[in-house]
Image (cartoon, rainbow, N blue to C red):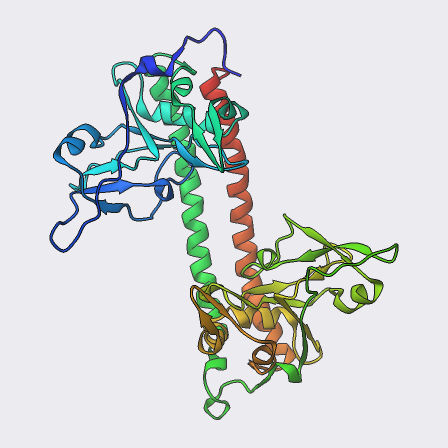
Length: 411
């Protein structure tokens, strides 16, 4: 809640203008683009822009003059929401070093703050907190299948207006925390790259023949049982049915299993016994985007009982010969991924592998001692990444509270 003692004014009163975006025409061999148009995919949801490239378009001279963005403009998403997803995301435009001409698409409204009254970065922070709060729903208009912004109401929302000096102090404080956040994010990226190097180095012997000193490879089915999951859509009637959580493709991430969003399926006792997961089962995806094919992780039994869908393979290792964590790590290595890339069946934007291909996959099978050495080298990296991620999570919680306190006037 904003401190009532702090001056509040309508958003419209701190602007020198506002205007809608445009889409223009498509470039051709005869006509090149004269403007880069920012779209919803360019917004990062944190008040700025991501790495996606803007669209090259052609504007008339009149539109270029009226709709060209200048540093300090705020883009507000005004259209394109859906059920449960409001519009109103905000991004501060501050690109002025590449010499290009920018505009926003017709799904946006551009706000041009008055620099004599309000700091653009301060306003971006405030409107971002509004978007993340329940207040944003006051400005939504539901149409068939779409949610749009009631822009006239949005312009009249109250904005806390401390002095420009105080606004810049708030911005500096938030920027300091954001810089710390960025440093930890870079550290995590660096650690992930190091882990990738350790992973590929550890599995280097898997990429050369046994005669050249590499590891012996055998078909996966010689040291593990590969099984499919339960097919959805069956009808189980009567008192004999049991509702059980199950893992979908979305739950099987690269290197770990996510259980944040689980669904249940009604099964018979026979199906429950057949598809029940055990601690140590390696789960990997049957299909999806080519670069995500074969991703997976080791099930730790955090939910009992739990099944898996038929689009997720379950690999149950003979742990006297193959440690599950070693197999999961190999599947994530360059050599392991290469097998799926070479053998996948591809259709438009999708790829898949069969259970037979998974069973026949050549797996390096060094001694159990060597497998444990590889696992331990990766565990050291994972522990450091986890520590950094925990620090980042704490900092983000702190930042949310700090931003709210600063903007509300409680600090």
